Image 1 (cartoon, rainbow, N blue to C red):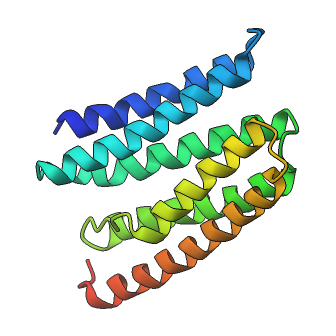
Image 2: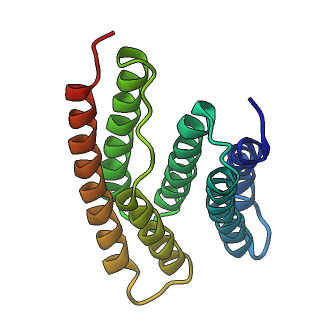
Length: 177
């Protein structure tokens, strides 16, 4: 079912290749422009969730695709920043493994547990905000960029552990299908 929040989520998917194209372009201020695209993706993330909750138009598609769009945006930015050596390789490895485990866990819950989708929680939202702050610090060459990136990875790992705990509780309560 396509509604405004789902259209906004779909727009976030479309921003991913645009970010990559601008990031690697020969434009004089390509980093600034790509960061603005990244921020637009963040705004769409906030906006689609707000509209969906306020007008009670939450769909299974939106619950599944919204976090997938977020993960793809974040992974894309990390990959691009790693390629240009703005961040160390270990960040993308840790973050990538965590995200793959999240995706596989989500697929498992959806396919094996009566199309169950774990909704976003405060841990994941905090991890996303910290990630955005860390990326901005790296992009603008803040003196705290390395520290903020480490904090972002640690917060993301903590959020992952919390999702695993919540997922296990759902599995134990849900009937087997």
